[in-house]
Image (cartoon, rainbow, N blue to C red):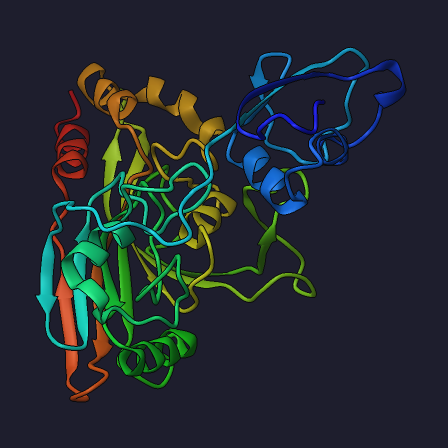
Length: 338
């Protein structure tokens, strides 16, 4: 590797015989000395590194001799996100908070692979300099987040006082205050009980570092999800194939609902990370319902209810979001059962 070459664009490398068995991240750190280990890890997790033509997202992958690698290094991002005029569905706004109904596909804050076009870029354009700085340069005003492909409600702090107050509510998880978060999800199969609680610690997967996993009680962080079954959908032969559930969070961990429902044996429809092994269940559906499921391009998860105490007035605020068109159409197809 020419150290004088700019570290950006597509870089191709080949593992030598003496590199056999070396970890991918260590190999890249040695070959691309101009990039930090943190930056290289982010590129791997974001799918920007290929091994023999296929994306490799495991930094610890052991290299075979002769492996052909390619690294796509985006140009350096500006230190601060730029203001971008992106339409926002604003449910409520005042001097302290703004409540957004986020569409699926919108990333909340800039990260590797998503340096622009995020909710933060839109908020900077909408709010100007009034956003809370507690979240840092990359996450101004962000108190909590939703996955890119999860739709629904989230609240943003417009000043530091509001940010501290809201952060304390989220840290308390509604145990002693007004905070409430409820999600609607469409899952494969039917949970064993009409109402239930999933209590299982979560931590980063040791096999796939871009995923979360259920771990023993002495590891990870506590995670508790309350669920209720709202509706059940039958397949072509009358067998119960899927269900609509409401999940209420007692904690707020990364991918919590997605991992917990998969752990229960009922992953979300459309979840390509935690539910791919259930894809064959679509064959049990009638043709139109099966086509709707196969065309659904994300995990079937919507943040439908958000409640909190207003950080300035103390008023209990409560908001509800109707299901977006894609999720409503999926449910209609499952209900029709034809």
